Image (cartoon, rainbow over all chains, first blue to last red; front, top):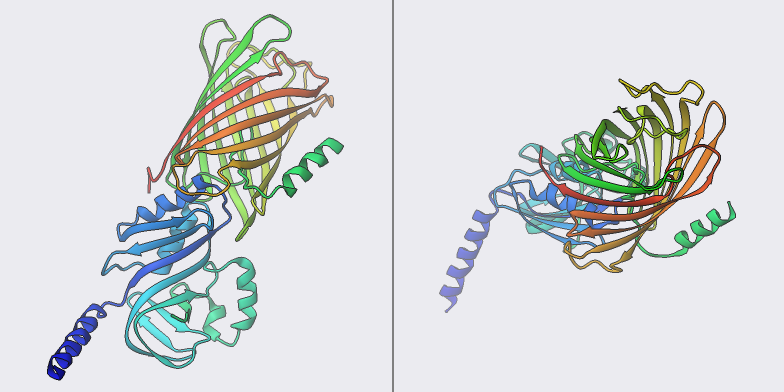
Length: 176
Length: 269
């Protein structure tokens, strides 16, 4: 019985490890700003759906929240999603992405290189990320203008934050 | 002015959703990048000097070049010469140069320009390059959305040219004017969204004015309208235009609009 359990555990760990080899965005929850009409929401919906890497989009028309489910092994960066919203004529007020991590040690101001872009962890206590985690993107253009003004003060201790480099994302790990 | 303030207060204090897809004016927002919308505008205006009605048919195609820039081509057809006659066309462009968006509000500004040609006879002092005069118009528009209420206002300069080949612009009339608009819109239905398939019903109230720069003659019209948005992709407007004040010659100031529009998303990348 105990032997079986061990095998099962090893198998589960192995499968999880395989699944996590490509740590990509699996889901993005985007709140769009500056719109109140369903025709406007539809414009964003159509823009997101035109990305081949997107599987489906679930929308709450009352809060203008777009939950985009992405295909496996996609190479979509947060910026690509943001550009889609802006092409529809609107802006991103909040973006929370779900990503898979494989035993990644993170600490405040740590930089994690990914293919094509990097993530700097802000307001984050040292911990190990394993499995799916949600991170909120704190950079300009991913938060409302008002929130960015506040963050410019509270995150001023992170030297890369104010540099605002295109492929540096400053992220905060959200509690599960 | 008091009535205006009252109307504004009624719209501001109502907590309903708002729309800015106005019927006779354009908001500072543009159509989505890569989308093409096709509109068929019909208007029927009553002649006040002669008997009868003026029918104008205006097919339009709008293309979103980017999220900030759009262009529109329009054609003007009317029955003023007793049979349907293609009188002219127009090209319009609008660039959104300022946006301050927040979760439940936005303030946007755009600059626009229009050039029209028309070969119909010139029969009134009012300058209207949308179907009557050759000429150009340039201006700016600002749109504010506060807690789902949309108010939009524009000011523009309009210059009439000769309606070539046959009709020169009368030298005795002012050939240029200042136009100003104020539009307010709100969503009446649904109160809560369930899906894109729900028909939305919007009520609009628009004020449109013109002052001829050379002699100060002015008109002000009001245009109440109801709008149906179908499947978040189609649109039907029914509006009524009524002259509130005028001291210039206008041959058919009052009438109705019935417009049909359909948006094709992601036509170009």
